[in-house]
Length: 351
Image (tube, rainbow, N blue to C red; front, side):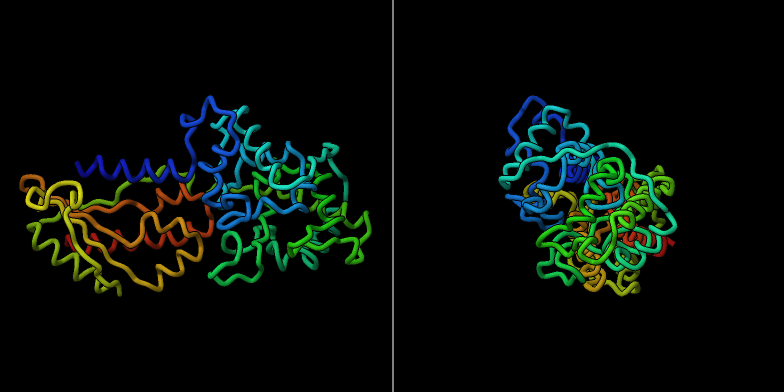
């Protein structure tokens, strides 16, 4: 029962975050596809949220359909945008058509020929003109989406330019066009208006393109256990009390305890030998939600105690395993800390 519940939560998270091919495998209804797979991050009409706004005229009139297609296929590795390649060509084409309907702009095409430039000069220009927004090595701005209640340095989070998904989607000519014209209603201004020449811009493009040679494996690519688990030498009741002390000792506040099947069966039929303990540190909660609101799927923190015969086991979902679903580099450190915390609490409770 417990294993099934964990699997259900994990599969549910994956379904929400990465999309499902089955639901619309034969559909060409772009609006319904968008509502299901995109609106939760980009807004019901493309106005943005966790994800960037897609309804900006200056965005849609400066990109090609090919860019949108490849972005949907590849996502943005390490950012909040997952890959949706499994949707298939027909569904992705339908999505692109619907996204285009947000404005009256037409798709543009770009010459795929690589742009040659001086990478070292481009690096210097990038440092002076781009790094303050896009990061010192093109890693992108911090946080997610558009500023609402969460504080941000800029209203729209600058994208990562060293990202494998972006570099696979954007041609050199498209990057150059964006640098030359800027994006109205965003922090991105025209480099020509900032005094750079076309040759300078070519050098910046060459520097951005060189990021393709700097890709490194991510922690989330490793094989990780789905559950952190230990066997307790104590009774269920003694283990629960030890767990509470361990949680409090780590500066967390206990929220509640309940049976695993609470709300699923009548109260008098609940299994008292399967207990979930919920706890929270509100500073940690706020910091994590500021990085990515989707982390709320497995917050507040929880640890489960199960008695099977004479055996008492203590377990928790491994946040590092879930970080793979979030596809957000900024969350990796938080998930790693959370995983270590669960391990320490469980070990302390079962010593």
